[in-house]
Image (tube, rainbow, N blue to C red; front, side, top):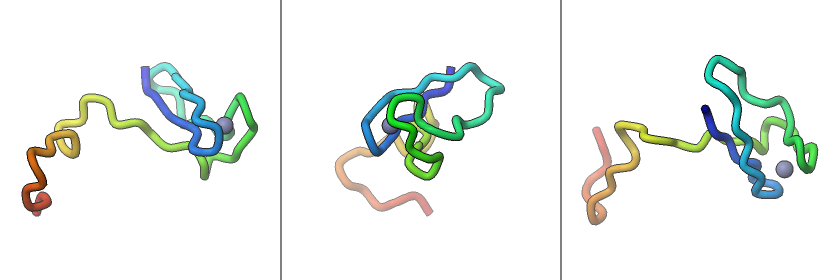
Length: 56
Ligand SMILES: [Zn+2]
């Protein structure tokens, strides 16, 4: 499952893999602009150890 979150209402939207990003929030109807992918298990970006230098 891929997870998205509506930044307008905070709704978590889960869609099966292979399904495109939702075009709008099912809860508040916000457009896709307000829906952002939640990084889940991303190899980069989740490993912040104490404010080191950003990846180059
Ligand atoms: Zn919403």
